[in-house]
Length: 329
Image (cartoon, rainbow, N blue to C red; front, side):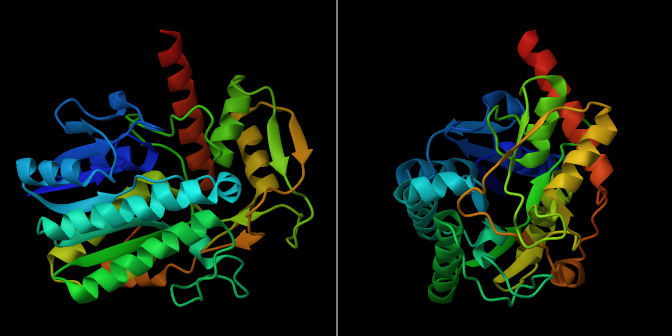
């Protein structure tokens, strides 16, 4: 049995590859390297450079490696970019996922783990946000992911095919052993951008919006450490293999931090008082969103081990320093 990881050369996908390998799983990776890096894929893992929308390629990988499950991470993920280029996001996320799902069904793959997002909830009226909260996304990014959830739901009713959709909140940090991390130079993740400001890769950090209806006027998010998130995927895969029905789960800690609080934590951990430039709001950003994650804990037995913002920041800083040394070599 082989697990195909799409986007396995990227940030979250590369952590999933490590989590699977650490458990003795056979893994294959498909990634177009638009934001990923071939060096992030371990040398003993089969790597294919290509697009998830290429059904012929997907079917060939499934056949060559005996793929029985797919973990789908490949996607466009920048909310403001989706507002500027909605058709690009519907093509890269929704349409590409549709092709991948069709290839999986045609090839007899029965288990599918989907990288969804809390952005499908939009601007929820009640906090924390449970899985039954109405999904009313406010950005094309969120809509593109919600459409894929709908396709998976309909496909599971029509075929011998079951899925888990994991709705991520804000993913941060890096592998505690320093094997991989967020490596895209211009990534918009707050903790990564702040870490780059610490080491001088960025001259300053931009803070987008200080007039939100939150305690300090800046956006509030639930930050989940990336290794804990990978573990949630492993548990979801085991759940499906054990006969679990198609299901959606939130992935978060149930605690929110504002942008200002995160910036102060990065400054505190690093000891560097980097400049912060206040900008206007970014299109598509929700004011606040925090997870209610009781379901994944009770049904999958998920027990996060890295739910500490200070540790998450320290991991991100260590990874940025590693990248700087790697790029200078």
